[in-house]
Length: 149
Picture: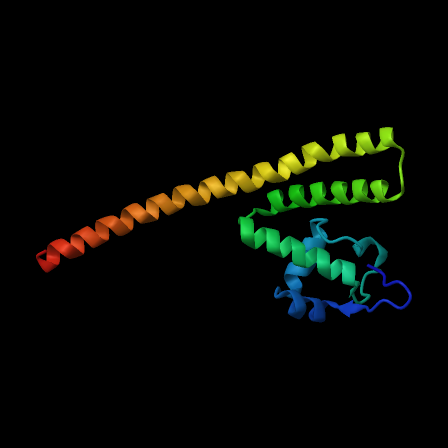
């Protein structure tokens, strides 16, 4: 979380306001290992965050909200994202074709895991939608009956 030279540093309250969460949420995400860097901060020191930290937190909150993830699932998904980021760095370093093949083969199961989680959430939402549509249909039928139609 230490800012590099020339990079803006954010305080925890600024990050919370920027992302739309509480400072407590940010501290908890640090405790869970979702937002790194706390090991470089001495006890009692102010927390400082980089643009990358803010972007990571924004992505975590987006995944949490869009997919309705538990913290355990969010942690697993964040671990996959970290592994994919590492593979992207390896790819960018100009590896040989055999190394690129290894990177691609390592990335496939990671993306499959993310897709599996999204698909499971979509199925759960689809089932809930069908349930709500059924309830709405019954309520409308009751209304028609009560109105004498």
